[in-house]
Amino acid sequence: MNKRLIMLLFPPLLFWGHPVRGQEVPALYAKSPIHLVKVEGRMDHLGIDVRGQRLFATAFDNHTLEVIDLKTGRQIHTISDLDEPQGSFYDAETNRLFEANGGDGTVKIFDGMTYKLLQTVTLDLDADNIRYDARSKHVVVGYGGEKFLAGKVARPGGGGALAILDSDGKVVGDIAMDAHPESFQLERMGSRVFVNVPDKQEVEVADLVKGTVLVRWPITCTTNFPMALDEAHHRLFVGCRLPARLAVLDTDTGKIVASPAIVEHTDDLFFDVSKGRIYILGEGFIEAWQEKDPDHYERIGRFPTPADGRTGLFVPDLGKLFETIPHHGPQGAEILVYETK
Image (cartoon, rainbow, N blue to C red; front, side):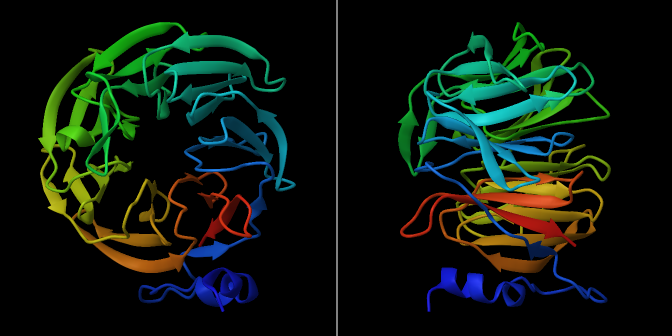
């Protein structure tokens, strides 16, 4: 019996991890998946409209942005003809949907209700991750720079950068990076942004107000793509693929204080502030790690998933973790849904 069939027939049995003392429920509990139609190939990062209960899925190979109603678990709209969509962000205050494209390096801004295209901002090649700076009400987009994957040049280019956009799409700032910026995290209580720059095997720390890089922290593992931040305890979590480790950095000093082995080929990881927990999405598994103290972490669950699902989104306001699963074999594209416990 294949793993997929086992998961469908016996879902409650598969989602018990290795509980910490006194824990009587799994870290994650599987809900009904969201099945996607007419979506082929790799999917990338997700965005969320919490108030409107909508999920935005960038279908990279399908050249679409899929809008999903979480109340019904169904697609309600498709934005087509996008050039390798990689990141999305919905600004509830302005009702604007930002979407970044790796192929042509554009950020497209849509009306959040009608999905009408309002503005196209051309940056450079490989517009990728998007984050929101609540302090300035600006949207930050990583773009540009040569990118290596599996030891080969996947996309040519010089240095990368972070573009800072206002709600109308005007570029109000640009911070140069040494190579393509992957995942990055913004402080809520300060003006720093921490940026994974895997081609340089480092984390670059920049100041959003000054618009400059402050310091570069070397990482002992390579292919450092995903990142999460525990700002209260001054800890930065960096997911590496070679070797597969979680590098935990002190954000005051840049020192690596822990580096446990984790699931292979991670592309997204998230920190659950309310539970002091890290969720790591990788090849064939989602792992849940508990923060015992700022320097010590314990894996409390390892949950099987299809091998080609590595991107997703944790939404604290909903208490849910989503993971994208491309179409493979008889199984169509879908988004797995987990409730955090």
